[in-house]
Image (cartoon, helix red, strand yellow):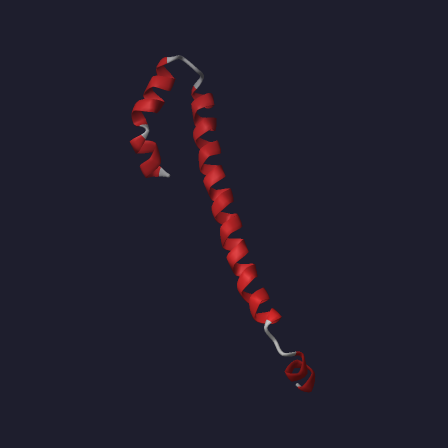
Length: 67
């Protein structure tokens, strides 16, 4: 996220020059970061759930019942 902010320094500077409150710029950057975290978290959770579910779906019922 720090790299993204550094690469958008000009854009942020122009936005600050149009005189919005600092809180507006801060909240915009926080929303962008939280959006990335949310998407990343959903992807990680999906992978963590998919792999065990796939393994469970491949269990032979006869083998499972014999154990």
